[in-house]
Image (cartoon, rainbow, N blue to C red):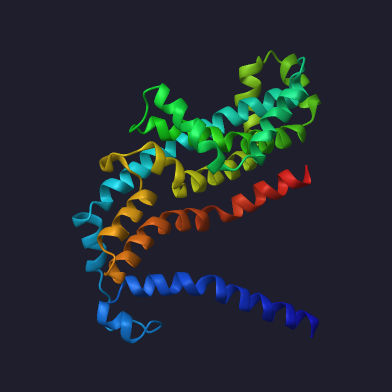
Length: 269
């Protein structure tokens, strides 16, 4: 009975979690009349033209490309720098290593809104306002503390004897990182890549502050603009919301096993 009760409450939690997503997807395939007449009902004829209208006529194809251009460099910067720093903090011995590591960890405790003013001043001073680079670098820097912490945990779980054996075979530090450490820590790298992707794709505040030109805004900010322009067309707003969150949902569903494995292995180590 206890087991049945657990599954019952779990099913209730799943229903309440997925119901808003289900309603948004249904709404995106309805006409305005169908939406107001039956919120939870299926559309008589799916209105796939809603997606075409939002994608092309409203310029969401351009905003989608902007999000991709911003997200991919963020992931590459975070994974590369976190892997190198995690290796240094885990396997290299230098003065002030622990102090420097804890300084990086302070970044985990600082909320993003409190950083917007100094970030804006720095980006403005570097003449990178209204540029994609002015969004990429701040977003990557905010994820870096967590990435360094995660990768150091993985590298701590790799025996030093493996590194010593590789050095005896003539491997230098670059070979140790690329041919020994990175393959062994691949679950952590994959998990960090997904976390970085999710963060960069759905970030709203930094692009909103750093980018004023509409042509280079990402999807999250473009959705806010779209809602202002089509405030009375709920089906089109729902369609735009689906276009924003469906890529990140697909990526997570494809990589969820690797993601859970990576985080679990990191926790065990």
